[in-house]
Amino acid sequence: MARRPVLGANWKCNPAKKADLDGLIANINACDTTDCDVYVCPSPLHTDYCCGKFTNASVVTPQNCNFKGCGAFTGEMAVEQMKDLGITNVLLGHSERRGEFGIHQMDTNETLAIKLKYVLDAGLTCAFCIGEPLAIREKGLDAVLAEVDTQLSQIYSLLDPTKVVLAYEPVWAIGTGKSATAADAQATHAGIRKLISEKASPEVAAAIRIQYGGSSNAANAGELSAQPDIDGFLVGGASLKPEFAQMVATISAAKKA
Ligand code: PGA
Image (cartoon, rainbow, N blue to C red; front, side, top):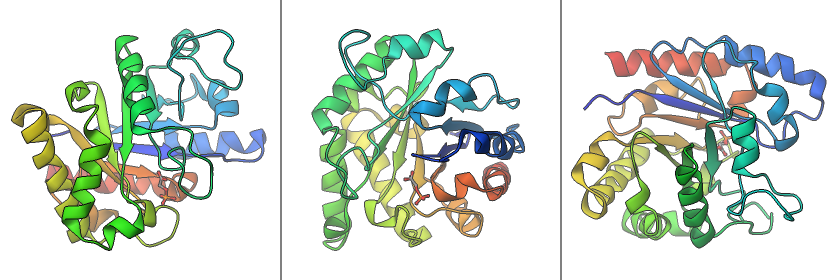
């Protein structure tokens, strides 16, 4: 089954100045989205500014949400507020929110499952991140897939391919300049698809899109895009640069071939 490629631009807690947003938005608007979906995750303070600014159907995607709605939840972002802004997609489970990189843990597999259900029940779609830390990767692929299985165990039943995109992001590859090799990434993506086939259904496994994330850039996008089970990228550092448009072009061409 042909899966339409999808790229996410995760701006994380960047840029420092609102005045720099228009340049980042221009990078996204330079992408040819004819054959590739694009979503963009601005920082919470910049999300509203970005709404309505994308001219190529790129989708504004907050980096988190709560699972209680509006009310007395200081510091939170509610799905109801997102809907009011015309937002249709949310990012969940990024490793930087799961407690990696020295930031305290803001989400667990339990809270993420509750959030995903909340998002889908509210009629939004989701990009959901999973991935293992270095200590697990060093034990080998079986250990990696066991960890991924744990991360997915509470959401297998929620994996509607029309509503959920998975982002496989090995923690050790994020922001380090050390991307997984194309062969390792492919083997892991294939393993994830097999788990989904067994624990959700073969149909879901065949249709769901799985992005790779972790030091992906214009230079390695070609090799990674050539892998059959890699359907796109969740991009951090390179999404702040003009090369992001090149990555969209690269995977669009690779998946059409
Ligand atoms: P990176 O980040 O591309 O800078 O490694 C990816 C991510 O964290 O989504």
